[in-house]
Image (tube, rainbow over all chains, first blue to last red; front, side):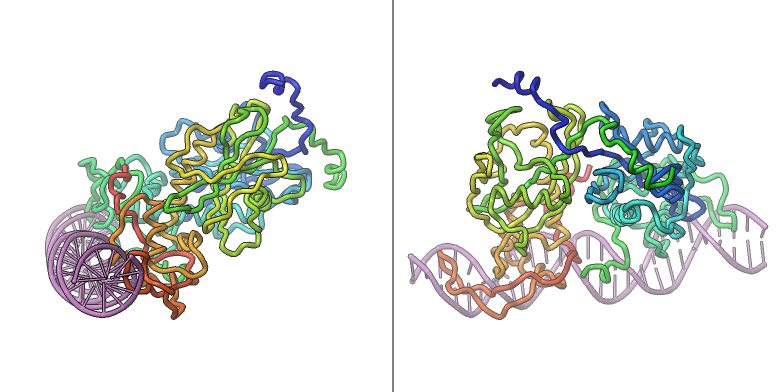
Length: 247
Length: 247
DNA sequence: ACAATAGTGTCTATTAGACAATATGCG
DNA sequence: CGCATATTGTCTAATAGACACTATTGT
């Protein structure tokens, strides 16, 4: 039997049925809070519970394409949005994680600057941005996925410039610091943070411009920066409270 | 329709057929070379080509269980082996990555101390440890998966104590240094490495014993250590040539 | 004796972080 | 004017890395 004959005689149905889905942990910052996109399940199982947006991977669709599509269906964010970061988070496939059948879910992590309010999906699901601190119980194992995504986001800020994907095209150092403080849930020293960011090659580059006005409560106009070309931060910006988590 | 009725009426066959497999990138160090476990494909597609060990996930099997099983089938390494590290690497699901059907593969990364020579699997596949530098073309997208696994391994040595999973229960600092030099493919300064390893809390702990004999070409007997309880290295051991890879 | 290696000491440049100082602009 | 904020300066402790030195052991 040559390879062509083998493929012709191959029966995909001989294997146990498995469904592959993508779920998206989409983070954005709204009103100084880290928020995640959740949808309320419109049908069984777990009808009415909050869950991560996601769905089945279509027949000729790549995994990352499916994740971008699911996110776009809920938010209207174009896949081509340059400021949208999408990366694979992990795959969850415990045999009993979905009561319907064997479902293996590939989770993706998305970062974006303040996104528009969600639009209702084609299947009339309700979607909402929810501060991560207020998230209660989620359907399936989505609580675990969200926790893993949060861990990933927190550590990615340390050694990659992904914080810039949470702010606009042009931003001030203070806005960037607010991203770190929000995601890490820690106060950072303004002066030291400022100098450190500027000392990392390729993290940010100056636009030459300054903000139109000073802060709402006074202060000088801040210089504006845009994201640089570094893909890794060296040296890294480490979380202050790291020693405790080491063991 | 309540949830029980919904599940009873649910037809898993309504979704496009997808197969889920696991593939394992298993690294060990043999004769001062980083080697990866490869199998020669016994049947189509890509008959005769080298590939990563792997196979279909069974019906009631967890993903990590499947990876451990596939590894055990090729090497005889018991899953319970305390010194075996297994972590999820990523999931590869391009629609055309397997000509038979839609196959989504969850890749796992395994580290272990010098493992025994592979045993022939139940399906009489040939398996062999191959130095990563000598790996030629692999079947499917396994070349990409191997490259990703290598990247992951190299950076994991920086901030986790995983190097200890490549050596025996008790080891010398020089043996640990050899792991770093092999995986990073860089010469490290013996004295500075020594001091730095000992300065990281929880990385290694002394056993109080020393080696039976000095080095084969002379030198004093080295103190023996075992892995400590740290799960993250702080401060990290950074690769010397990092600046170049930043952009 | 000789060479190789383990482990330690020393010095310098860099970095993290605490704290202070200055200048700007809103109310 | 008074206060909050942006930005820069200064100082200290910790760290990375280069280099040197001593002690030990196999050949």
